Length: 92
Image 1 (cartoon, rainbow, N blue to C red):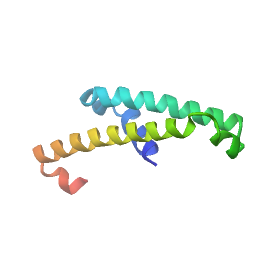
Image 2: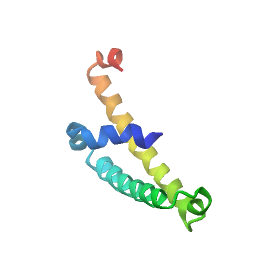
Image 3: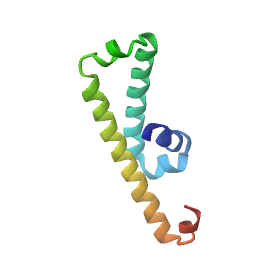
Image 4: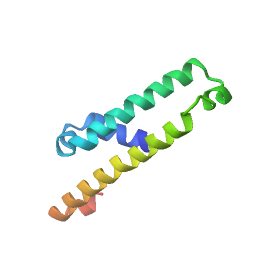
């Protein structure tokens, strides 16, 4: 899942947060929304009723799009770094 991958990067890496402040803020928003949904789901673990909450599908789809944007910004940043420092191609 994209969120799991990006959480470790955007929440734990001060360098990434400094280099990509807009993407980091966007991820913080997505992170808070996703955690809120997970808390609600934990409180009512009935899948059918949880999925039928009004706006849930659209909300999750929106979070997915925002995660895609964060991942794109991160990929672009890493690609720029690889071009500046070709030895990073071997690391990644």
